[in-house]
Image 1: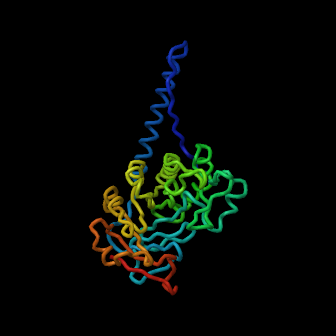
Image 2: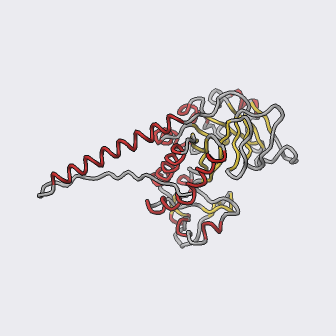
Image 3: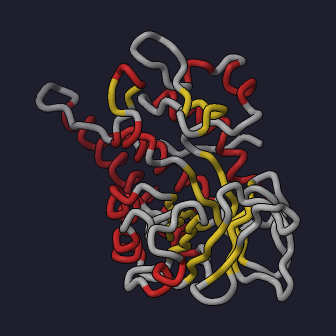
Length: 293
């Protein structure tokens, strides 16, 4: 599927010369077009449905499964089927490659991957089978969108209600040329492109992590937030203070400094807060864990 991406150009009116009046008129026309595009984007955002803030929530990226009694909100991978009778959030890795999809990027798109100062490809040290995307130019961002835009619209076609875009925080982790450098403004620009595609497809879109940028994310147009381990790192207020109750919170069994009861008693925790095992295995897995406040 080809996704049409609207690029809004800001023109600086020329000063003086015989064509100045004509240039000014053209600039005014472009300004009107920009205002129309912004109005359309705002209307698209207003038309989406946000996740419920009450009910039963689960985070099922490792394995999709049904729970006795059903679910009200669930996050599943873009390759999974939505859950019946639930609000479904579709996981899309928007700033790194997915495991098993390296060939998609290495075959003709390697320049869209981040390189360090020595010219070597950069991988996430915590997820060594994931390369990091390079959003440093308009052209690169456009080509990334050509690849991932159809994934987003595919979520809508499959029946998901929203998407979460993972790894926005790469700009906080790759800050030096020696490790690969990502600028915050470039990351937010790519995020803005994802927002436009999602809203045009009728999907709400959640900011994933990046506590440092919740205000930026909300102003950019994210509708809600998904946060991992905000209680463990004392960051929950950064999300609920900006997104209010529209936050989905996941904590993990291997990083609970004060226990899950303390998480649930926290004044800034999200209404929908759960505890999961790190690998997000299904109920048949030995490490499976699931609790909800």
